[in-house]
Image (cartoon, rainbow, N blue to C red):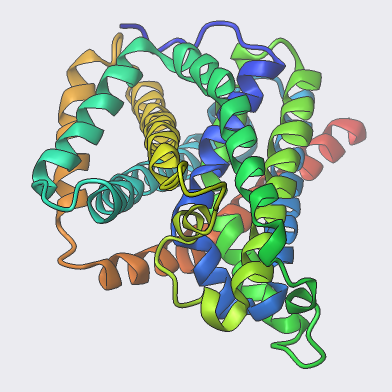
Length: 364
């Protein structure tokens, strides 16, 4: 196993972007957004995706001026200590996200598909599947992601189209609601959840050129945000914000509403397989980013000795929270209070340092 990422194009980049952003569709995120923003929660994926996209655009623009990856960029602009601080922040963001998603997807699988199974066995299944995928390399993961992508988007659109008879568009535009300020907190939450997208900049040398990264940001982050906004809109229009905030698994509840005829039922069981695959890909992408940064920081010749301990620690951390309520609270704290401000501050510091550096060069 080699930590080098190989050569990737726009398709692989879009696969990476969707692997990081799409798991939020299958978790409790739409219900949390409905609780915070009410009927306007359908707009938060657009504002969150726009915010994360702008921050990534700034980082890739700096890379065009100071070629390399995020570590070398930070080293040129902030010095060695600054480069380590930036890298450790993104290392924490990716590893924490991987641990959180391992717990959430394992718990969701237990609640929906395997209620009699042992929780430890399900967590081990996710952990070992992720370990195998990371061992194969990020190129294999990104290609698997964009191969699954048409089925994921197609399945999602099928569910949304099937809910047309129960949709009430007036739920999206109430005369009295939570107001526009209620969108701010969920937007910051989603910007924090998108922090692992910095992997696109961390792996910049693997892409063909900066145009490839720009296309990935536009079609990957932008496309995923539009689709998630559509999914949130259908969710709110189907259940209303008042009922939608009470659901634990929004997408599962939407799939349960599908009705074709009395001979074809329980279609939601098919989508459980889909979200398991999306979950494994998302966790593997974040774990690979963690592994890559560790190898880059400590200049290890191979990630093999680190992969197994990192996976076992992830499995154990995912098993620590005693219940789903604590997991939900940890998610809000991680994405909304830690990663979102860190992502914004880190990008702005790099931008200011880059402007000063380029200004100094012009003065010379």
